Amino acid sequence: MPISIATVDGGRTSVDESALDQFAASIRGELLKPGDSRYSEKPVYNAMHDRRPALIVRCTGTADVVDAIKFARQHSLLLAVRGGGHSVAGHSTCDNGIVIDLTRMRGVEVDPESRIARVQGGALWGDLDRETQAFGLVVPGGVVSETGVAGLTLGGGEGWVRRKYGLTIDSLLSARVVCADGSVRTASAKSEEDLFWALRGGGGNFGIVTSFEFRAHPLGPIVAFAGVFYRAADAAKILPRWRDYCLDAPDEVTSVAVAITMPAAPTLPPPIHNQACLVIGGVYVGEAEQGMKVMQPLRELGTPLADISQPMPFRAVQTAFDPLFPMGKLQSYWKAQNLASLPDRAIEIIAARANQRPAPVTLVVTFQMGGAINRVAATDTAYAERSALWMSSIDGNWENPADNAKNIAWVRESFNQIAPYSTGTTYTNFTGQADESAVALASTAYGANMARLSMIKAKYDPDNFFRLNANVAPAATARV
Image (cartoon, rainbow, N blue to C red; front, top):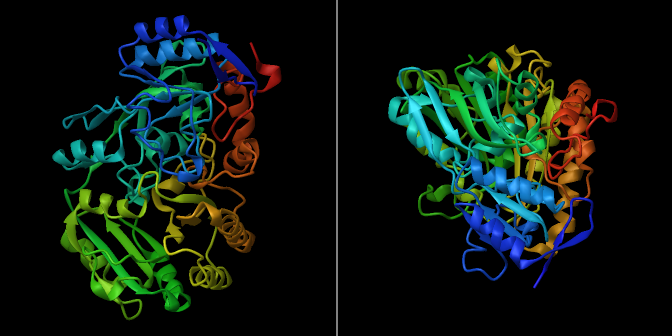
């Protein structure tokens, strides 16, 4: 009996069982349909996008991805790609289409002599940290260990060592890519240079990356960590002092200020249970004892409710935020923007919004940027924002779908209040998608790089087959 599947142009098509059986027999992985026992075993992060694809192809390697793309193209199927499934905007899945799922492709290999890490496209950041930290190395990555390496990297990638070692893409050496025509290409500084440029921040527009090669850097395994919990009510006093510290801090320090209501978890100090807090976090790249001295001022910005600052394994730092982002449990809508500076008036707005959050796990986050990030030219990678010293992210997270409208409205209002201090650019990895245009999102992320991205898109994906992303439309004049 034929099954009805969504097509890339918004229509429907029928695919008969014999074609599905033939495709399933050609791959080493699994072809799953609704009703199969393993169909729902890997939820996506954002419960707002709990969608029902008609088919899931759980690939085991590059060859499976090639066959899946060719099958999807043959039938013009709507296609989504899942790496870690942590896309806030819901790009990891789709309704009634086909999902190419890389979650069985999680291999990591580290060469400690050359300091090179090779990572499959379905690996999570915790998989990579596990292997690199065994050799006292790190690839600059995210702050949640369950985030997929692929999605975070292709969007730029910012984490706890960004000011010393830059964004994730700044350590990317090469990528194996399955393109829209099913061809397999290796993109690097010496091969498919235009594709390599586009992958470094251009998202999933240009193909499916089945493996990455990264430069790794010295770190840990023990690092100096600052984790100080101040009252959110004191944010208007704490944040200016934090800003002033950050402006003079060396590149070895990367810090963040997060407003959140802490849960009453047994692993957390009792004084912060169910308390609205401003968490000041920091990591130092270098000798741990020296780092604790350098970051001591972060512990003296006011009167803390609790202070868990100490030297600790970097992997423990990387997993500290994991409980706040459970897979498939929360409705999430985020909006981020980059700030050239952090004047007192901007801080007043951020502090006020921090104390007006509509849900306990909604976050008002200010990231310290700068350092190595800013030493890359805006046109050297597709990721175009290389001047900002700060990033503001309003991370709306709540449980009840009935509260979606009011929470989305609150996030947008917060974003709009901070926008006068923005550089006009956003960060696609921290952006939810309710009714925004994916093309408009891309234009605010890529700025002057958009025209070049459109030309490269036309070369590698002239039909815009990969469109469930911060979409770059192919330039009509460049299509071949």
